[in-house]
Image (cartoon, rainbow, N blue to C red; front, side, top):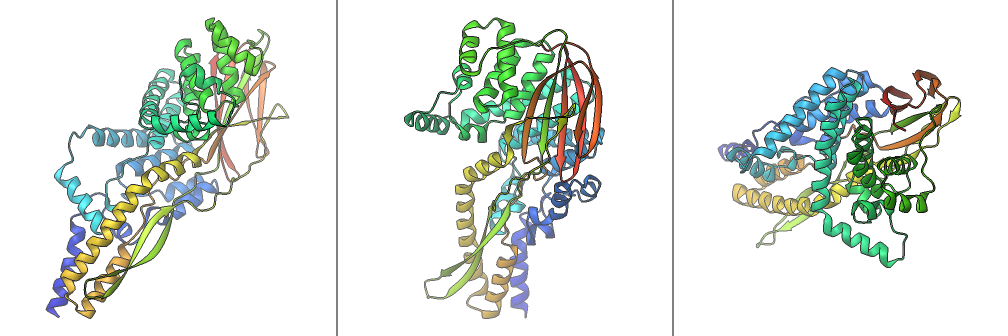
Length: 464
């Protein structure tokens, strides 16, 4: 009996190395997507109040928990709370990034997670998630009519994007060479911005939504050179998006970039500024929710030198079959809006997982070996002890499905020239109205999940 008590203490003791913010029964015996199933489903159905009630508390740490909170509060139109949550996440990211060396506590956490599962390790957000963190901080500033604050966050988000691009430069260049070998038409945006023409690979690395919004806000701030830089980059990412094309041509014309303008007009047609007696409405529309990571388990037999066999369960994260959710077409002034894809968040999430998968598999192999060592050293061929350790290993082997699962699935955009005066946006059989002066542009921001939507607009002034 004492032997099995000692064994139990040894097995549980391996988890004490993981005594950190992520240490909980939920993370021992479940995984992130499973623990947040209620939250995910509520957001997907557009039940924002229910989603707020289901927000995680100390599940994945300050970075990811506050990302989820900030996003749900934004959808529930609690903008002060949203901004505070995103700021808390941003602060936690800064603390993580400012650490010059790995601390003893972080090392212990890593060892403990290796002995149990990766959910106990410190969460390090993906580049695309950091980009969205600053994007949504910027949107909170914009919603509060603080253009300067919004632009600062766009600039910070762009720094994340540039770092991501540099880290993946070789892969993007390889994809570009592959496209060129097939004789595909050069991407004008890539030529103008010196970006690799890597097609969908670039779209999975760079966030067109962020680049376009950044360019638009710079333009509203009369910072046309900065605006043009980001319009070109957005065009490299989404070369067939009408709103991006229009913005790039418009600012190139206003800046007198004649050589660039000639290339743009040859590919996309003549540039024209809106007439003084007309106005423009730009719509950015988020749709749905990004896919949640799922768990995949596989039984792996291990044999020792004596020929004894032990069965272990390894668990890996994966994305299941993806079904694009469709939404009824929005209307502007009783005319259906033609929209273009600006960002596919699912593609970004899947690309990130594919990059991380080799490291995940290596950690799984190390974990299986470590658990087998623990079993053999602890049980000494004792059948009951062997069974206890096997049960513990099976129950605690959980996939690391942590990701920002309340992000939108995709983002679309529209840009329409309209008559000045009262504008009416219709979605879900409801009208949203606002006034627009002649010669001015308004941005309408929409996020749609299920049969629900939030919508607001901002006047961007005389963007011509």
